[in-house]
Picture 1 (tube, helix red, strand yellow):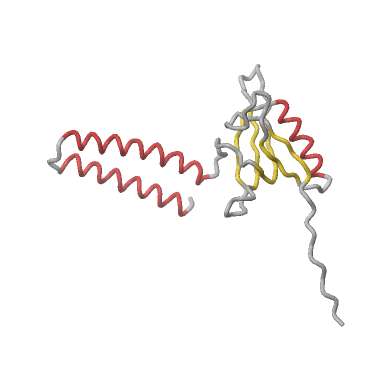
Picture 2: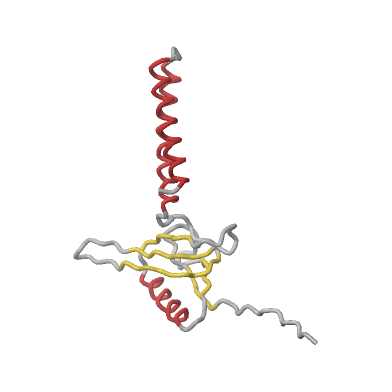
Length: 166
């Protein structure tokens, strides 16, 4: 269990203890007590979502506009087993403050699956891949179900020349 998770869980326990104390010991009006219960309940749901992000669950948020493609995992739909299918992407956001990859979950799309297979083939040949969101056929480039993406070779980095010693 990570330190961040311990902090979040400790905060939830303290918040719950304060709420119990408020309801048992205070002479505040019932409306204040009910308001505190509602706010605390909402906070628990927000904290639950935060804990999932801390644990490394794939994000259902929109992918960055441009990203470095690291890897993918595809679960194809299967009608017999009632599996809807999904695509999981690991990408680096070039604009992010950290260089840690982020996992994203998307609904399955056969066209995107084909693009990922081609991108993986190019990566296997030693050509790092970049990706970007583009407007799909419906004209939107937003949303977690958005499948309008394109992948292309990352430009080669040119290293500076070494100084020749005399």
